[in-house]
Length: 270
Ligand code: KMH
Ligand code: ZN
Image (cartoon, rainbow, N blue to C red; front, top):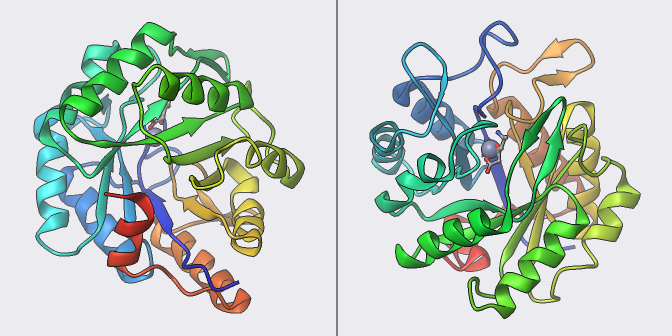
């Protein structure tokens, strides 16, 4: 397996707090420092959320802009903004920062139960975000929490609202979404067009086993505190970089080279 591996670092998310893990970066400076640390151990893309100074989830464009500028000043990393934000945020708020033209931004193509909450993505909202991404020339990463979201993305492509081939990220193991087994992953990955690419983000203790499977079968990987805070049972990861490092080691053992910055851009068409 010689296809270069793309590792995405999901360093913060919207739901975690410092009470969950003291290793969570929050300010633009902390976010940038963690992204850069992840780059140096093999990550080529950062999936970014931002926080208010008190730690609350935010989608403020100025915070995204500050973090992106600090990252871009140091490393050639692909910067991907979240348009998912936190559950309950209105779509206009979620997608505002797209105007800053990050390399990529997420596009979740359906609604999913999210623990006891609902991550609401009715199709009119999905179309609105897809149109905004097109308007600003920002490539989507299609976030799929279940198989119907792949189908919805293919429908959007038929409507002319998104371009194929595209990059899909399968988020597996959210309570309410698709389970996080290799069988689930092996099924959902058959649904995307052959020339599209995919990564997997396993939630919680499924993060590293699913990463290992993706490395073996030729997919790509997202890891980070957003999805999982532990490096091993009961051992907190000291930030996202150690999780990236663990995946880089898997790649080395499997004989898969890590994507160079240029290869990562070609792979994602950014
Ligand atoms: N925080 C989740 C409700 C994304 O970044 O686009 C949504 C999320 C997806 O994290
Ligand atoms: Zn996210």
